[in-house]
Image (tube, rainbow, N blue to C red; front, side):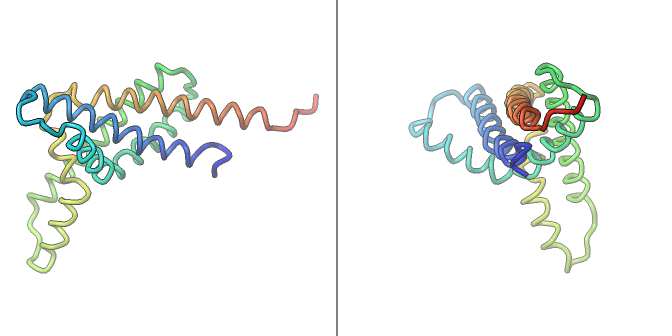
Length: 170
C-alpha cells in the first residue's frame, strides 16, 4: 500500500486539505467580521483546524480518491490538469453531500429513527451544508492547493515505483 504512496497521498489529503479549508474559512471570517474580538487568533485557528479535520475527513478522502481515479483514467500527468480535476471533484463532492444532507434533513423519519437522522446530518454532512452557503471562492483555492500537493505526492511516489521496476527485456 505504501509502495505507491497511498498512505502519504491520503494523509496529505486530510492534513493539508483540512488546513487549507480552515485557512480559507478563517480568511472569510476575518473578511466578514474583521479583527475585532480576535484576541486569541492562533487558538481560534487551531480549533477551526481541528473541526475541519473532524468534519472534512470523509469528503476529503472521497475527493482524493475521485481525483486519483479521474486522472488515472484520463491519463493526466500535468499539474494544471490535477488542479483542475481536483477543484472540480472537491466542489462536486461538497455540493453532493450538502444536497444529501438537505434531503435527509427535510425527509420524514419515524420517531425511532430521529436520533439516526440527527447524528447523520450532524456528523457526516452538517458542516458541509454550511460550506455551501459561502461564496464560490471560499472552497476553490483550498481545493486547488490540495490538488496540487496531491499531484506532487503522486508524482513523487509514481516516479519512485517506476524506477524500482525491473528493466524490461528487449
